[in-house]
Length: 405
Ligand SMILES: Cc1ncc(COP(=O)(O)O)c(C=O)c1O
Image (cartoon, rainbow, N blue to C red):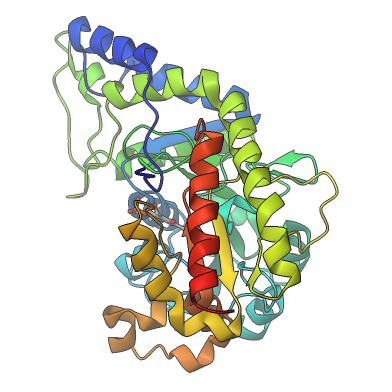
């Protein structure tokens, strides 16, 4: 059997929707993007959304419109993908890399507080594997730190800004608040990359919820920063309305209607997709709980109180016990030989060359190191068959047996 790690799910409807756009005479940004924006806002009860090409582009643009710049500091977890940090470097600010909780995978709020200085302008938490961070605690914390940055957005927020890297947590729910809300983060950046719960191949959405005038201002600003700072988009420039200007020499990171068409179809299936993912998660859990009782592995679990909170089951990360940790790579290799693809999330930033070169030290984030050394992400995708899940479990158990633990 071959079990891929997380294949994209594309149905006939997506193919038909893309074909329709290809035949329509308009394939770059416009009608389907607008439909996408409306649909996502209704789905997550959010006021406004901009679509951008990557997390890096989304996080960077959000920091640009906030005027985060040289000498400013932005706090992030060590346990994340490079995009969370590199976007800060792109705006010339300094990433302050802090450790995760001892028990969980998410950023430690206590560690954040220890690292706040006068220069801290924003915090970018990551909802690892789709499990929301403790937003109540984080919001209580930022309220204690007033900030201004001489621009319209800070003039309205007046404190350290929360920009959530919600790559894994589209439609995760934190205490009945869907993961967009103004009670959770000021800006929430969602991923629709090929391996994510819901896909457009690549592309991201930045969601925010202020009031009408400020939302419109932010929307236009992000549009400019992601379209060359050109005063008119391609659609508006048609129909004899060609005249335009460029205010800054900037990037282009807009979404095409081809991608938007895929997403619109995928969204219809999303509640079902989430249910399916939860089923797979429960199947794994049934078997692996026995191993947990024997202290062989640790399973993903609730840490911050689970009332009215639901994760998006984006990953199924297990942690090997201390005695198995030096066998982690061997287990991954042997599973691969048996046709089971797995992954490791994440290699902490200070272990990557670029961050080492910037003097970040792994000794400062030992909880992240510990998780990394013991973590394996098992395959999880909707409509994974029961036999396929059992094949993963069977091979994992067999390997553990062969390792005599
Ligand atoms: C936490 C996190 N942030 C960001 C990204 C992706 O960033 P980008 O779209 O810039 O490659 C990922 C991976 O898809 C991720 O897991």
